Image 1: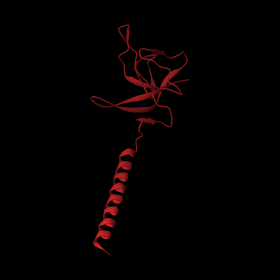
Image 2: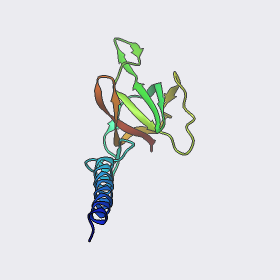
Image 3: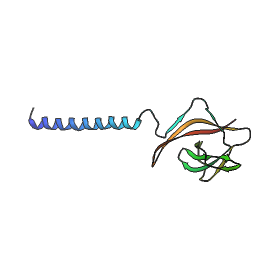
Image 4: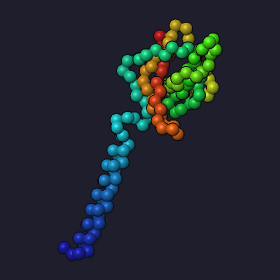
Length: 132
């Protein structure tokens, strides 16, 4: 075998191995540690009841709406409670500043958790749903 042919075959082999290695690394990084790209983890059964009856949307995200829950202290109501995520089912109809009121006879229950990145790091909030 001539030196030129050996050089060309070695070059082609090196390129193929480099592309294959980069593909494997990219695939491993995209799957992460078993988490999904959207940051959503759903429970098999509904969890705790969230006691608030009103929520104010502070930001609409692709998955739904992040909202502050209502807290009442000394007879004064304010939206300073824990942040929750209401998932959008189908199309997102929520808007910033919207007040979501829980109908009588229904409760808000945690059905999962949502992790998202902020400037200060990662934040995890409960995903909630209005249920009977």
